[in-house]
Image (cartoon, rainbow, N blue to C red; front, top):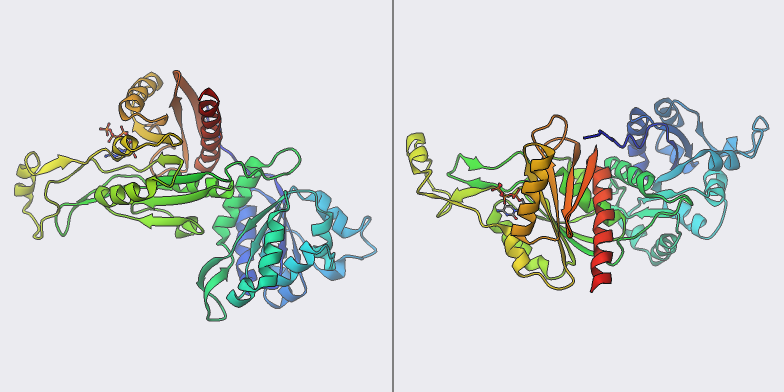
Length: 428
Ligand code: CTP
């Protein structure tokens, strides 16, 4: 199968605007990560942000000058600097966006270098707000934020919750740099030729299961599997960035917790807990994507309270154990007319086996779509950042999905789901 990684940051010209919020101390990390991923980065720093982060740090990490207001009318510049920078950038990221810069922007005030770039810019812009909780909740700020959400070339990343530098606990933290990087990649993957960021999943209610489940055998031992949960979590973030409302039920993940920021999550451990949550949340979803690698066997009466002797354990394997019920097949029994189900199947063997076995599983479980992916090939599948396989669906659909980063694949699968949804609704 052809390898088609996204490399979507390589050579991309990204302009970072840094405003006066204490979260500016995290921006150098974002700049550094983008540069390491091959992007060309330039920074603009507002006067108040210079109290919090040094222009020299940004210049050093970006390998470029960090521009300030005093540079705007430097006679050395052949063109007004705000125009040069707005034309140079393929994508602009404002991280953090302060209340003041937000207000000036949405009211069309080209105040300072960054303010004029924002007005001159015709490229997509990602705005990551960060401020004190009281400021964030202020009606004027909320109105301004609402206004910005209507800008077609702007992707708004709301602040996350937590302990703020002002000792307040609440909303106001800048989204983690890892999440901002995910949004940057998503916009680069998704923007159209006009630079408009399509919110084509707006109005969709998505329920996703992700990660492994685990079954305790006794106080020391458990049965689980190698799923990290990355594919399901990235599908959840990608759908959210495209406008969907998303519920994520997940087992114990092996991922940075930053990737869960902003999602409505339901952490579980066992298949039983996942099943309970699934039953509760299923009715309000219209797209259900089951990426979870549910553990296959468990003790019939749950974990023993005492640790079993290993000889007894092995002797009891046949009698005391049972297979875990198929949550996907069971949830499909409760399927309503407007719901679309997608399963995932981790398989081994040749491509022809993947397609044949996968299609049989799709039919047996009754799901609309099933993504069959190999887990016996290097560099893809469980614990890896890349994946590929075949998307199986109605009418003998067997679409090869070349190996790609799990984020790129997530967006491609969301595109495919939308197409199948449209086909189903047209045929009804
Ligand atoms: N699944 C589930 N409940 C289970 C097992 C699987 O909901 N007890 C779902 C997974 O979330 C995934 C799909 O079914 O969407 C995986 O199917 P498959 O690879 O066939 O796993 P199993 O049904 O466990 O099949 P096998 O016996 O081949 O492992």
